Image 1: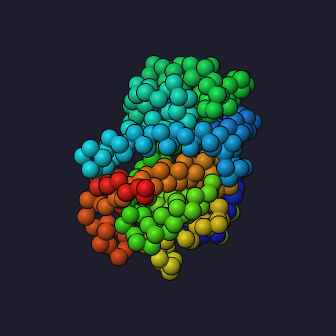
Image 2: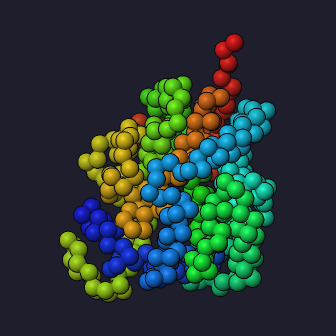
Image 3: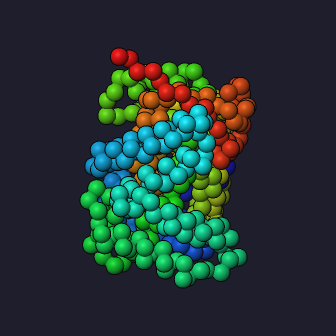
Length: 363
């Protein structure tokens, strides 16, 4: 897609005539979640999509479990920064360990906090999924993943997302939806760490963030905007795929049935003529839903929009609020980030290194 109007047609036309269950996506997700709503068509998709929307509360800007989630984020970020303060440096390895503790507690419950084996198993299956058609499926490992997830669903720890799906009909394939949540929270962690580096490298953004944190209040609106702006600059899903179920018309022409469609997010996120296209400008998102600035597509759009489009920015913002409320940071790497008037096209979250110093408390 090269025309923003066609992006709206395609994403607004999901699941018919532009299905998200493309051949490529089905081949990839078949390695660990073959019954996920994203790769399902027809009546079964409706059942599975409903489970996602109800558990993740897609229709609500603030999830009903927000207080418990905030407590989890506070506890894990406190543990993270306490440990990092010993060396005075925060890197991706340390951050990601803390982030996945948050994810496991939010999705599966506090008892899953240290279930590193589950996260490692997911990573191994996702590595195979990257090869899609070219890699045979490890069905034994896939079955083990879903046995482990089902055990958490059966436990249904109060306050967890697993408890929200307990008792769902078998056709909903709850653990296959949950596998996607665990998968998707990984790029959410990448976005959090990138956003932290971007904020502390930008005097205006840092001042706004500090003012919001000082003011308190339940809604960290600016920090949510920082999450969305980070996704605009560095989208974690750069390629949005659809496939026509029948012939379909676009402004650019007519497509036959079974045609592949690609929306390449970076092309639209940094279009020529876009104000501050290569700068970190979170204010563009304030007061707006993620879908209001199409063709910016941080969470896709339409009937296949990410069902966690509100929950993810909320958790990212809460993590940023906790991290920024107790420490000051400076970017050690990459060196270009603090000096660049225009941001490069990629930001390697694995290579980000920050110094951190506690903020003196008034007595």
